[in-house]
Length: 232
Image 1 (cartoon, one colour):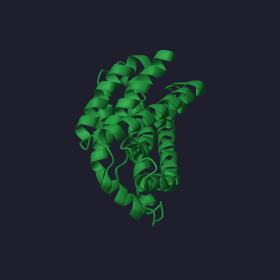
Image 2 (cartoon, rainbow, N blue to C red; image 1 turned 60 degrees about the horizontal axis):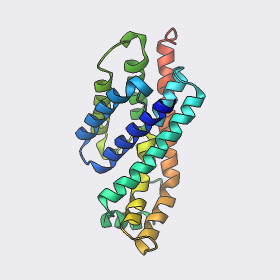
Image 3 (tube, one colour; image 1 turned 60 degrees about the vertical axis):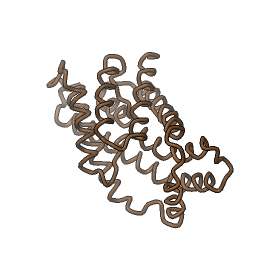
Image 4 (cartoon, helix red, strand yellow; image 1 turned 180 degrees about the vertical axis):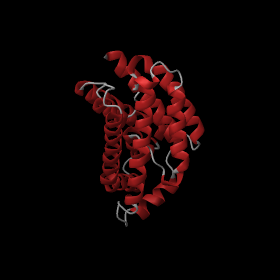
């Protein structure tokens, strides 16, 4: 189990870091593809708490493994946010946007974005279950490419709504602004207070977004079992 958790930590860390630092989807998908082939022989390369839930509901992992994986993945996401905050520095435009957002409801436009997260997470999790666990595709060597292309395609299709399909990436994205302010020496300043207030305001939305992602993954596992009841 130790090696599995270490691989999950490394893979999730670099996936989250790439998602935060890169503005281009292609390098993120390429790195994800490499990370999947790197980690699959050891941990099955989840790198995503929603995927870990899908594997559990699919019957391919235990409850203990699920909680261990999710804990490591979320910890890696926080570390990635810290490193990204250091690398990127504080964005004054983000601070201005945070000030404006404080006067609005955190759930403005949430219905549409939640629907997109649900659909995208469902699609991604189902692709992963098909190419990574199905007897129909057992022994294939294209699983990493299929998953990376699914992420690239879904992210590109719904790019304006910025679906992450991954609770770890959602968590890291929400924290990077506050960490950037800290590492830029802004601790205790008005900017840091604004970032902190913004984080507190959007926290319920982030949690709701993560819940939607888990629902999408659960639906994918349920759909897989309905289609292939004999595949246990």
